[in-house]
Image 1 (cartoon, rainbow, N blue to C red):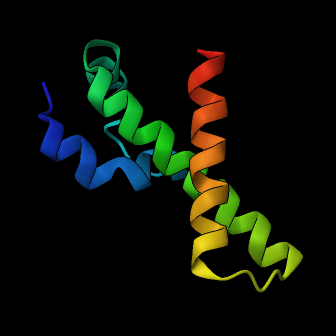
Image 2 (cartoon, rainbow, N blue to C red; image 1 turned 90 degrees about the vertical axis):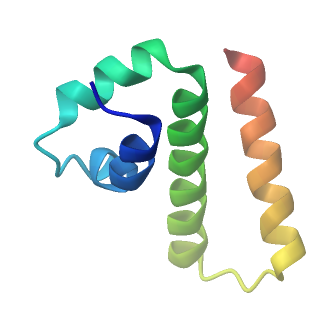
Length: 79
């Protein structure tokens, strides 16, 4: 089974669906709440980043960080 360090290293590839270790990562995520949280937060950060690039927003770092935190809180409350 993959370790948490290995999952963190290839989490981006997992989200891009470009890793042959997809099933091993899924198995690890079923058993590891910390890695599930890490991957979920990474996904939120990536989605918000894409939205900001597409919308060409010129927010400062504090505004961006606040948006990420708000999205993470909303996602955590829906679980």
